[in-house]
Length: 168
Image 1 (tube, rainbow, N blue to C red):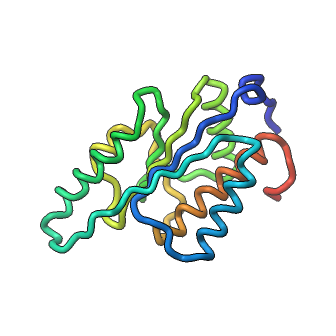
Image 2: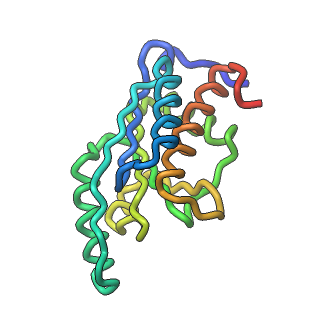
């Protein structure tokens, strides 16, 4: 389907997920660990878990999002390609997502950072920094599930790019 660029063969893509909150459920941790292991031949992968700030007063939501946003931005380099997971973001099929990752690789992008916000969403300052705003679905997922689904889709994208069976 796609031709494999030389850059892809010689240089592993660096992928990071910056997520607010910890994964507590054992079955989700096991699923994430399994896909991280499978991703090893294709990319170096890092998950940065930042503690979510508990909102006790709804009037403080925007202030808390700003604080979370500043913490998230401290982990992002100027040259990183940032994809925020947002309800109103662009939706991709698995094949379109794979094509986007391949396009970024061909364009010389060496690091992609995915940002999964808190239950209140993504800070406007992080959204403004995004190179791409992406939505997984019109449905709403628990943030922990979103992390597993995103990692599985990244793995699926690499399998599609390489022309390997998995995605059918």
